[in-house]
Image (cartoon, rainbow, N blue to C red; front, side):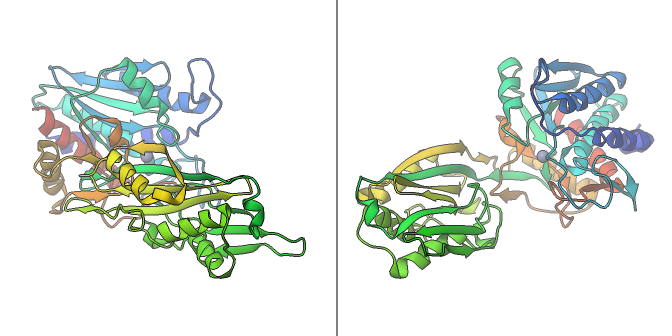
Length: 437
Ligand SMILES: [Zn+2]
């Protein structure tokens, strides 16, 4: 039978399974024996594995860190990497965040689009391929992670115990297909102030921002003298991968202080240097890293956090660099530009870029399947954010949000349209069939 017909037959079961899975509030909880991320996440994992077993798949639980649902045979393995953990519900929902209710042909709930709906769509896609007469010459393994929203400990553990698949897709971002993801680095710039030096400054302390990957929306500076009111600046928050979309409160503070307050001492020089080397710059020109390439465009830089007191100062920047550059090159260039400033540099967090050329078989096949199923002829995407696909050696994000649709992940009133859930399953079924034939 044709794949789409089989999906239509499973329509109600796919919807019901998604509702039930969304009803499990699988936010990260206290770790326990064989439940490293808490009871609720474990419930979601057990629910999915039980369903996989009922549908006739081989299933495995990797010590509560992840699970897999598999069929097919052959020397190679196609993986589909999805996750069952969710971020907390937050406030302001119209419908219960863990209700899985359907209104207006939309299935509401935390995780509906990120990533439980897509995970279920992938599972039923596998079922359709298994039931169809399509040839299956590879293994197909749905890997279900449980710590995507936090530290990816699930994947660290999983790949210590299980083999790396030959190639894979992750239904945890956007269509048509994301073939390039910029490299990500969080870098701390720091300086210790020598005794007596910082005392010469008017400034007692500065604090701004809380996360490297967010454009800070406030910054506060305390000044010497009991009667002095603190100086504050306000900005507009935005994701750190798109710093030009926000207004940086730390940059504003550095600018404000540079006009009349900065003198000749360690602390003030640190601030002046940050202003000179970064300031309002979101492309890394001052640090000598304003790189770009033909695939992923220009580097972005976000000055996310500042923390300065009389002992020392640090700033944390989030850098998204083009896929054709290397981490070491960026660090070397920054070191050169920091030169005589006395500012040290420390890599806090790094994720290498992901890049598969547009003519890579995986990108080409997925693009074709998407075109055939939707009638939309679209170019592969490049993003500055990081998707779960980076956990794979050869993998790309493929769906599940369609172009032009609202980005509801981590938002209140998260939902997946029922029609999109079904279409996802059809697209994944065809993708699997094409990739394993
Ligand atoms: Zn996700």
